[in-house]
Length: 262
Image 1 (tube, rainbow, N blue to C red):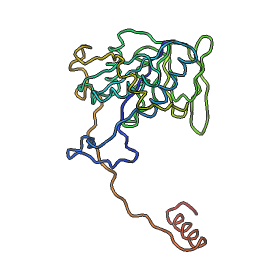
Image 2 (image 1 turned 90 degrees about the vertical axis):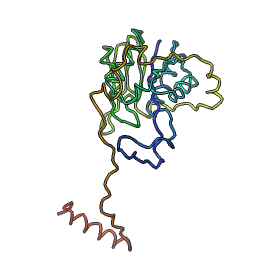
Image 3 (image 1 turned 90 degrees about the horizontal axis):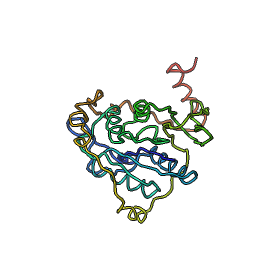
Image 4 (image 1 turned 30 degrees about the horizontal axis):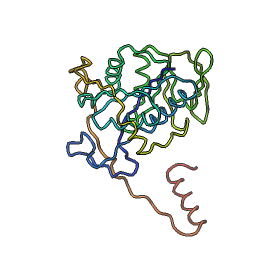
């Protein structure tokens, strides 16, 4: 079984003090630590598990600058067999449709039985790349997968819906699936494991080599970020003090004042 998995490097922002550049165009990135996108990490793990269970090979692909190679090395250390790097700073700032155009060019007609990617990225959260790639490659797809099972003739995907509801759908192969967090428990990748794959070759492409000069980046995208801004500071919260009865009475009074109770 031939599997392609998409992975993206994103800044770790959970505990970072984010600052916006003076022109409001981007975040100050000098002190940010980068890592693999959480949802993509689950997708890589699922791809490797499918390979281990059913045989075949896994190729991991990323788009980004030189630093993004760390994501590919991590994927190789987890058990991927090959890596493709769309390595050109001119790719940066592309919208999802432009990113997909570059990926299709880099794949060059190669066919995979299954393509996996995270349902969204932690930095942009647009959730479009996987769906647009499925459209570009004319593949059936399913999103928000929390379970995958190979069956005769295709794949059964368990999808997460609203209100804690699950849905099972059947897909013929080849297909594309976007993976939700929690589908598995990604394996630990040690520094030693990453060192062991340092010598593995990575297939690299730039915009010129893919004949995409002038067709990628912000200027070629139909979507562009105009400005970043922190939310305006609102009125301070009211801290309720006193005994339980007093606090409950005051809280109920505030809710009534706001129209929550009649």
